[in-house]
Image (cartoon, rainbow, N blue to C red; front, side, top):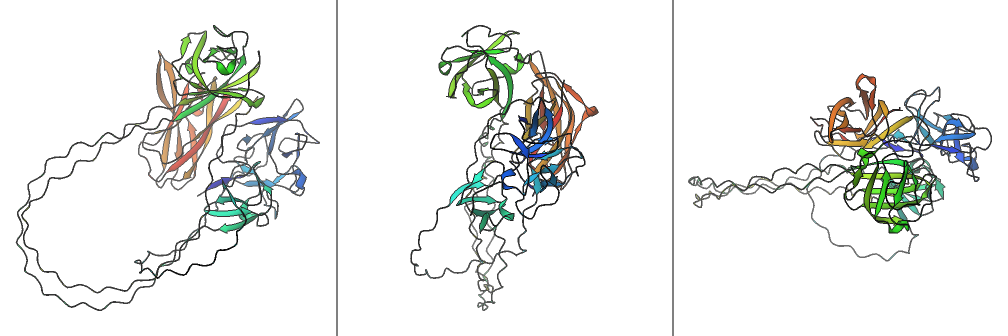
Length: 554
């Protein structure tokens, strides 16, 4: 199964082009690293101070380099080989399809002749086990051995979970897992792939394979034949039992989530009423003591989001952060029903979760809203009750027949080596600044096996835009194929209605799917909804699809 590795985590998220000042000559398509002065310069596989790489330059604007970071698509390049993995080259700023003999750093994978998916490449690292047969019967337990002497205390290991690249620095003694094997760091390192860098990592537990089939045991002696007993009379049939009671209703499905963000400015001169177009306000001058947030129906981009704000419900999350500094933020939970003053403003009752900053008047803000998904489907009906009791009159039992020969017990197969511990999942990173480009990528990631017609992804389109194409992959491919439906949702008189606008098709035995949009282009108004529905004839082997839909802002 394909696993994604490189500068960061896998998947195809929405692109993020981060602006940086440059040191030296930097061109579009160059691979760059972050200098100590927090500028970018051409990365070099032969120069330890010029690596690791942080991304690919996708454009130049106002004297700054626009860098496509890990998990983003860099466009506007040329001469790429679709599907090829690119590495940091020994020529400064360049990338190559030839893996260097040492200090190998993955840049990404080409998804067209002009685009590269930065920091996320498919590498098939899964080994195959031996073709051992079924395990023989368990042999008798041997006597307990004498306890050995206590060994000396070894060096301490720190289990840090599955290996990730990017900016994570591993210290000596850190233990990571990858594809079922465990490795311990023997040198401090950053973005060094454990399976191919033995000078930095030592394998401590390899993924075990199936043990070989045990040898066939010797045939035991034939037992003496017993005398055949007379056949007993058949007892009368018992009466049918009453039908059992209907089983209990299954548990309610778990609610999913959806998130998006909008741009506002802070109004700290008022604590009530309309905050003004493009502004939000708190109902307490001490922001951390506020119990209500008020948003104008227009963002500072002049986008009317009345309908979206009306979707907020108790338990949803609202995070307010500075546009230029994600370390300055407040997180709130919606605590009551929102009040909508049509085409004016929306009042949201909240309870503070955490806050490390109080914003000043006219501060530029990003407001992220995480909405709970629709309620899950009702569980299946319980099984039918047990059959009624059988007749109590039993005919006589015949004598026991002869016992067949018993073979001796085969030896037990060797145990697999111990698998290292799996660390906990790291926290989700903060939201980066908005992109200045017009193209967008809308990512979805579904974990597990979808059921027939299950909604595997849903999002609100915050501004007017078109949808033209997309990319699709899965962690476990379908054996007979899978077709998911892309639907567009629009509000009319307070009712959300969906229509089919395209498909995502996975061929049998393929990890990559094909996105097709009806007519090549579909337009969305601000506040429209897009969702993806699983195949009505679900392939049970198909699991964990992830994909992105893309187009342009209008």
